[in-house]
Image (cartoon, rainbow, N blue to C red):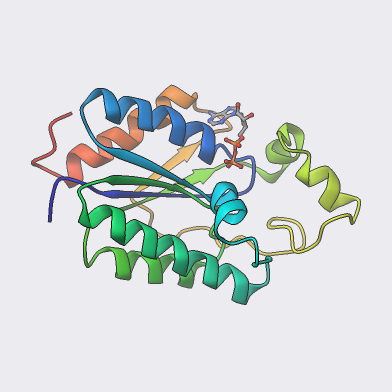
Length: 180
Ligand code: ADP
């Protein structure tokens, strides 16, 4: 096992996963980590255009993301994964699989549904509320909150910087050899 790790950010759409991931990646790269971002939207566009948002398709999406994480981890690359991953059992499966090759840090990006709807950076809640899209997590589909994540960041009350610092602190505690 090298000094890489997998940081898995889970939370509602618009909770802040991508925003936090980008800043976290910048910070880790400043410390000479090789980092790859695995963003749910990008992966759906590039690799999973065949998948929708049924539970079965979400499971398949997670399986593909896990496979990518394992490939990258085996080559010493730290993965920052930002995927809604609403089902607890599928996140647990991801953890068990990834832990075979790399430390796994689950980050719950917590944000009230009201704030997410207000932010709506991609206009998706508007579409879901008007019935234009279905199976939308938090509205028609469930989001199962993590029961014991390694880190909880609350983007309703914490700045992006504070969230990133919290995740870095958790990495430091988890991984003694990592010098940040
Ligand atoms: P997700 O990837 O979870 O769908 P995004 O990062 O794309 O979410 O969007 C989150 C939105 O919320 C962005 O417009 C971001 O600027 C805003 N935001 C406000 N406060 C925070 C915070 N503390 N952390 C992260 N994002 C925040």
